[in-house]
Image (cartoon, rainbow, N blue to C red):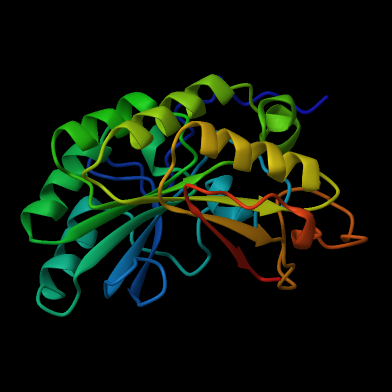
Length: 253
């Protein structure tokens, strides 16, 4: 059975260990691909409460220190963003998993006060954090990873927190202010067409209105978090059910 990382709610913080340090692994200074309609920077948070075998950011998930250094202090990141005001529209909070850190809401408030739009990439296991950010108008876009249906959730992620994820999904579906997308990465050693069909039906039942992205696992030659075999076949997207309430889209197929 996979090891359960559910109780690893606050992985160790990398960097210099100072009180003013956020668990930030790195900053991507510019992207036009990761925040719909925005020129953005990506803040990569170290550590994650999941252990998905196909994850292509194992060094970030494990909180390993960058050999060449990196931006980890709050003031370093805020100084960078201050200098980019007028050049960038938004900031993506990614990782890793940003929502597991208690200091995230205060950090987001500071970034939001500079005039940036905020996108959160999240696995949805901290519905309390997402709720707090939504209630305080601190989010402009959310990308929610729907890792697996409940019966395969622990096998894919290493944790037993599907109910927490489900609360986040319900929360996002219930609100009408912040646009969000749902996405699933598929390695066919872990997931099959029946699993994706179950997720599609789940989203239909919740009256989801956005876009559901099914993402084919691609090994880019770098390390992954788990020792997964090569995919013997790709997901057969032609036999998936067609949703009536939302858009079904495919990446890397």
